[in-house]
Image (tube, rainbow, N blue to C red):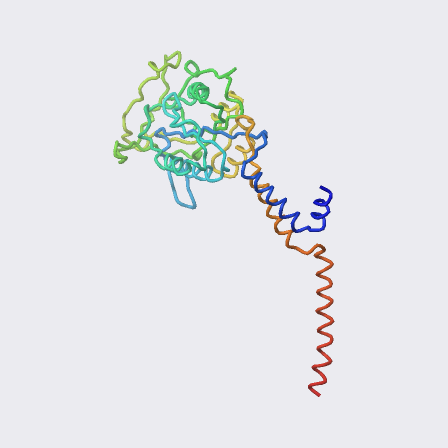
Length: 337
């Protein structure tokens, strides 16, 4: 044993190569260590009510609808998410939010998620009404059905239709499950008429103000008494209902559910607000060591063929080169003379 030790001590190259081979063999077994890490999982909710067809937003100077701007934001947000993030897409219409799928890993399913966003359409809605307050309750129930927890990023213009009054407004005081949810306001504060479209997405007029009138005498909201909206088309320009981002209302809802609000006009503001959201959960996962070990083995292979004292030997080579040059200069001068 002593002879072997002395041999390896004097044969640095053999020692380093042997250690490198040993590390490569260890790497083949794919060793792991358990580490705690944050799991970021999101339910991204898109408002697909008809007020999202209002054209009062812009992208790079081009006028677009709220729906198109919402899609633009979702594409950009998905593109910013690191691998390992999990995403579910949800649709809001009527009184509820429907998840198209439970959270899936963003990099492995990037194309599928992008395609989902591309196909967002008001015609996918199952109700013409919009009850944002009611949807908070159904959304909390939806998330509880997920196999794992998820944070919420909810896009909407804040339009409650038909308008609520004191007797049919759900009280969200004491609501549980909405902590740190993020509401994102889409739309401008200038009033713009809501286009009424047919099933082929062709314009047939504009929604009348009467369609969005309050419903007197309705004591509480329920699926059976939400009330069908008056489907009349505005006969005159003055009869058109003007829709705008109800930022004050969204802020109040966010406050009631212990969530947060951000204006959707700034992508960076949304991303910053999402980063401030706590992770959906913390989990232990296996951290693979094989690439770290293989990299160390590679360094040992390189070291085996490097000089024992590289700096010292480099200096000696440099000095030898300079001495050789000095001897060559006088000789060249003598030959020229």
